[in-house]
Image (tube, rainbow, N blue to C red):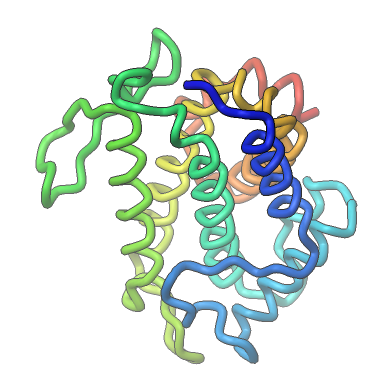
Length: 229
């Protein structure tokens, strides 16, 4: 697919403004989890202020003293969802059923979709269909107040951590697919540095709280060793 220079320049600006913004906040369609004045809103602003301050990303992800672990994880899950959703949205026209007939991370890794409702068994899907299902599923989990409680004083459920682990594991697969199959487009968009920063933030966070199994990280192991010192 050919893209003219003005369109390419616009996409470069979109990447830069999104990943470099110090003012914008990004939320799923349901805004409750970040309602202004709530604890989660404060934690979200605190996390983004630290991220934009230029300090060590490994320090940024650590739980602030006195804060609740589940609240800290919840606001990061929402933020990662929005950032990765935007990242893929900028590249999605290059990821088609023709260019990516399977959801894969190179020749050794294939991912099958299963949500227990529309796909009761693991099913091979083209990458864009898989990722579309993935994003819709994640948004449903985030917007479910039984999993991500909004009201002050409502405790997180017992299935919160298992659900978060599944969300982050699936979002990691988007990084895998983008880096392995669409890295050339990241270079053309001059977006490599922005995406690397997003990835490192994500990686340090999941490692800090042990939220993704080591075997799931294997497809990007060599790259991770290179950029995440």
